[in-house]
Structures are given as structure tokens and as C-alpha cells.
View (spheres, rainbow, N blue to C red):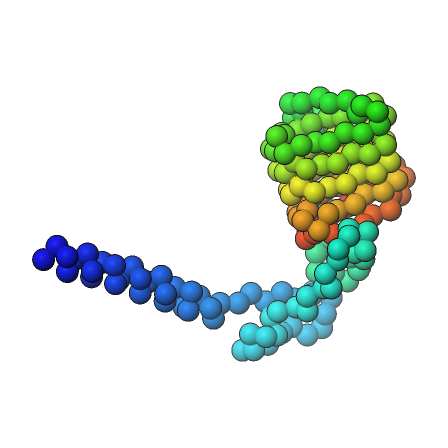
Length: 188
């Protein structure tokens, strides 16, 4: 009798595992551009899928997002990127050595401030914050970072970098977009 109970439980678990993806396969999410005058028809699941952008092998090959994008920048973003407020959260202080620094993955979730002359800075860490002085080239490979720069010549998002927010206090850096949902803004 115990053997038949195990077989019954296994059958129920196997059936649930096989049916769950089939039941969820009909789910879809519609992504619309608010600037567009027409919305996709809800009855056609193909219309809710935007055309995929061409893949890029290097972050500098990605175009800047267009002004008609459906991404809306939060009007409170400059206040969120206030250097004085973020400085209170800093738990690690680093110095650029020989003009270079890397904020490694061991600093995930931490707030870091770099000082010194930084020709190149690479951020690998995710879900934290980085305060930077003037930087030549900033490369971001992590996800969910909040970054404030005094200025930069170039900001490059790796294709694996997602949901980062970067603000600069002066100048106009060249920006190479890669990844998804990365936001950049000049700060007052």
C-alpha cells in the first residue's frame, strides 16, 4: 500500500510540473510607448512583444535611447543622487592607485567613495552606491548601482549591466549604452 501512495504522489507532482509551464504560457505583458497614439491589441499576443534591438558585442556600439522612449525619468532623481546625502551611507573609502580603480563584487550592496586621480574606474559591484571624483572613463558591469560623479569624459555600460542610475555634476560625458534600463542624468 505504501508503494501505491508514493506512485500517486509522484504522479501528482509530475503532472503539476508538466502543466504549470503550459498554463503560464498564455500570459503576456504589453509594453506600450506613451508617446504612441495606438496601443497594441490585447487579443493578439504577438502585438505585445516589442521588436528586439540588434545585439551589440561592445558597449560603445549601442545607441543612446531616443527621446520618445517609454522610460520616464523620475523628477526626484537629482535629489536621490545628492552626494551629501549618499556620503552618509558610505561604508568603504578607496583610493585610485596609478589612475585606476575597480569596485569589485566583494562590495555588493555597499556604498563606496573613491578619491584621488581616477583615469579609469570599473564598477563590478551590484546593488550599492559609488561616489566618484573626476573620472576619465567609467565602465559599469554590475546591476542596480547608484553612481555620482564629479565629471567624466566617458561612461560605458556593459551589455550585462542593468538598472543602474548614474548622475554627473559637471561636463557632458560621452555615453555608451548597453544592458537594460540604465539611467543617466546631469545633476544641478
